[in-house]
Image (cartoon, rainbow over all chains, first blue to last red; front, top):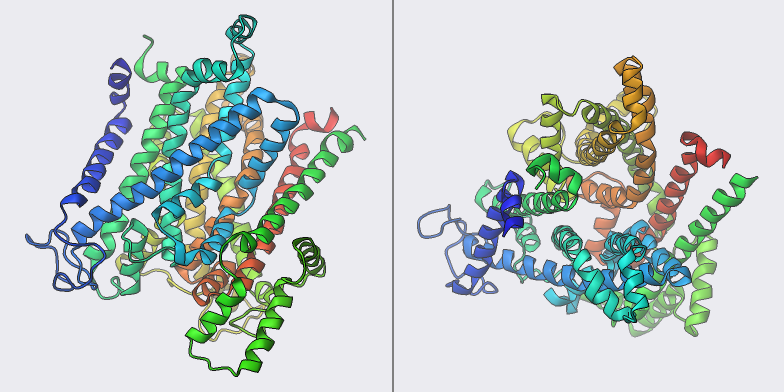
Length: 284
Length: 335
């Protein structure tokens, strides 16, 4: 509880928490949507925002507010799959590399560093071109997770490297604790906050890539996400035709989402780093 | 000699290994995915309503099979793939037949290269200077304002940011052309008029890249300088009466810029992808636009060519940045 109270003293954390709560509520609202998001022409086309259609309607004959709730939900699903699965890979790679050291460490870190260097976006485009007809939320999430672990594996590895040198490691090994148990019971609690902060960054990264791939038309455009909403709005020239309510909905939602996720991760990692915490919250 | 042995040779080995890994991944992707790229191309050709005689179709399939190097075992294919790469042969573009992928890339590349080099240089240098000053004078109000701006700009993906700028300059203030690389019908010449035209058109894409890249450099530099500030030698210099300008310019920024060089090397891949996306937003005629057209047309061979080319270009750029490191850090030179 004290941790949370300290965190909320940072205006950035409070802001991002608020924004994220609103966005998650929006995603949950999609359950109550009166319209099926995959059907077209369920409402009159191109209406301005009104009491009946809060954010207006689009040229496909869909209600933009309810469409946005599905978009937010699906974007969150993709990025959560990507974030969680890549966390598992990052933790495994980071811990094995950090704990084993030697040749294993060098090979794993080489693969990870290469992933950082290679233009992943282009590799992802190649993959998406080939699996376009099988593309769904889960496959897209897994695809992103497969490439999104490298940086965080490096971060976790360096943490394990420093933990390995601490006295309690030697005590545990000498008293006969197994490697697996040592890593899970002793190291994980230290690594958890760090892993959480990398998870937030990874979620933002996944949402951003989904938008990019969707704009290039490489995902299933009938499933509403922030990216596909933007794609449709661009496809129907909503800027030229002055349908600002349509194009602005996904743009504004993603702007807030990205800023909120970034501020939250910055605020958490500053909190985790005691030097900056003392500057802001004061010693406790 | 020690420098060559301990720094240069391991770095070169790493360079070739990364290229090998990247190209192998590109080789494996079409072979591990459930789709046969040849049947896809044929399917799309048919979908466009081009009616072909059965004989002609067989001919096309044979050509494509050879082009993709899909004959023989995987190992044979792998050798053939590398053989073609060494000859610098990336095959033909399917939808701009018979243009070769090499030629298409060669036409688009100077645009991307010019945009990337200038924006990366500007954003890195300006970001470091401003970030360094803001870190040194971190209690001044202008430093805080810049920090707040960076906090908002930094998390935005290239696409969203470029798009927001586009909306602003297309509808609110119409100062700059919002699409294209030069005026329609302008002939590329080395005249001031043409160069001015190109610069004018590339202003918005360059601004997007500079602001986003600069925000990252600014933030990291500010953080590093704040840490360097706390070090003993800075305190000592202050007590010894060295002027502030001299401390910042000669000691603090010089020390802080070292990790920034590594940071630049690490982020070149991202900057490159970002530039491709920004080009698409502004219709700037570089590799990004070429990629976009390739995606829209389902031109798999062209996408593969762009990817292979980019892997080699990016790893080489990173190598060059890494090799300049000893120029800045005497410790690496003499060890």
